[in-house]
Length: 202
Ligand code: SF4
Ligand code: SF4
Image 1 (tube, protein in one colour):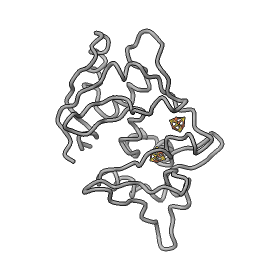
Image 2 (cartoon, protein in one colour):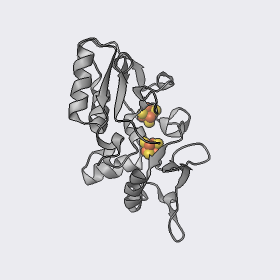
Image 3 (cartoon, helix red, strand yellow):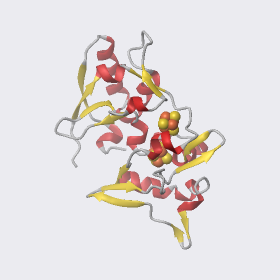
């Protein structure tokens, strides 16, 4: 689906959430087992490029004759990442600190920002971008079912730093600054130009 040039931002919603991942120990409550995660062709190409490194954490990615195809075309230009039988994404793995994302771990190993390897939907979560015609950046409907998300009670800052970081990585510094300024003014919504990875730009 063609991405819009401008999106609405639900400031009331994104100002009201605090999020910090502490790593799930069980698949039942893990965000990596709850959703069908889809990527664009560009994101898929990036992930395929780091499969050998990801397989060091997730050996099941390796087949007998190379790497297994872990993507299924869900709709034109959009590819769903395979899951295990329990619903856990094939890029998730268990370690001492809980369930981790191999794409995130590989980025940290190389020393680059994880958003350059991870699906944009995963970087953005617990926020979500609704599709056009009412493209709006808001929080996912079920976000508060996860213990790592809670209603934000802190005063000041307008938006929680973890949420702001995700927005900045995916929308860029300028749009992030615009969103923060509008939130500090107490506005309930604003409209920003879609730039960066969410607009299909590098
Ligand atoms: S973001 Fe939340 S649900 Fe997902 S792995 Fe971290 S703690 Fe678990
Ligand atoms: S790509 Fe990574 S963050 Fe996204 S669902 Fe899979 S394991 Fe979780």
